[in-house]
View (cartoon, rainbow, N blue to C red):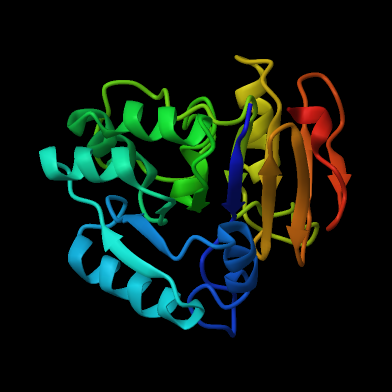
Length: 233
């Protein structure tokens, strides 16, 4: 499977600007490709979001066209050289892609080798479902089934349990364990500042903070920057 994926936990690191921490990795993944289509549907103001992405990616000489959820958008998605799906609300993103018929187009193109970049919500939808998102269901998609570009679930913005916290609600780890009460699909909890780069059947963890791998009935496993994730593919 000739996948070329860059799945980013977050688009903005604390103390840095939009995409600062991952811009070089985006540039490297794209290679000679200097045009991409930006998917803005996770935010309400799609036009402003598209402008933001275009302004930032201009720094590496990449021209951005913002996707629309109409026939013109379906044609654009079918012809795109690369796609970048931005973060926001995962439920709104998935519903828009489903309702517009774009989900199937993006899946087919990405599985055929078109570079796909996702951040936060855009990373969530690369998994088989969005059942491990942190977002509120502000809208109701037809189903939770997403792009399925990887065989595991993803939890972007993963937060480690804080031993001294007085918060009495569930930790992220507890929520993922609840998921595994109903499913045996592995989950990658990817911390802010980290990303996964997947090319074909090879995957590596990049960025600054690593990830935790959760499997049903097992203790979480730590993976550090530069380590392989091939076993999950």
